[in-house]
Image (cartoon, rainbow, N blue to C red; front, side, top):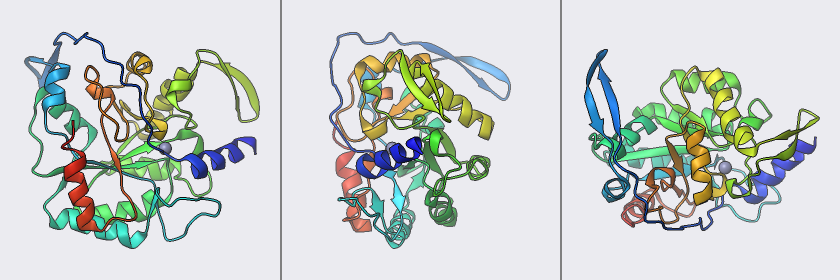
Length: 297
Ligand SMILES: [Zn+2]
């Protein structure tokens, strides 16, 4: 019950609010690294990974962030910034398709940013946060109409709870080619993680390293459901911290997604920008804002 109340508190009062991430600059630019590319089972040679400056200089892919897709406003919430109506969502998907957009997945984005691999024309990424059930029952059928694929940032504590997706739904989405990736265990912000923290899980108190609990364990749980690798992460509330990036890397993540603050000049892969879709926008307005938001550095 305590967890449940906490969850309600977290979701309805805070959701994935944008906030200013720390933007400490250092002069350390990582040396270009090499990675071995394998095609058709054969090694084709070492490809050079782009450095941070090259990654930053590539045109950004517009990435949309959705939370609730529903027609009712939850009691107690003072803002509707994290909901779009079902009709709005349908119109937005149609507008993207009519305008020639193609959805891309994290693998494609990574290959593009790191190796310069071309993307389809008019790329866009559709992302869904917090494991809400309608992201399966409403978003999936709409995406199916246009051959779109989504990226689901899952908060694993809520899997199987009322109004959240079940393991079976998550597995089905993964099997159908959507990306099922991490948004922590219980939506705590990363700049407050401790190496030793007391948590309560299924009524039992225990001491955990927050980084392991929120990132490593979540990765394992989602991988156990989908049978696919989890290497991408979205910061709760969009809040990131420079100090946390090495911890995220250590736990096997290749990219991390914030909201719309400035990207870090030395860690662009761990400060990838997204934008929350506002219920105030028309579909055409949304497409215009995509252009302006993702042309900023
Ligand atoms: Zn969230």
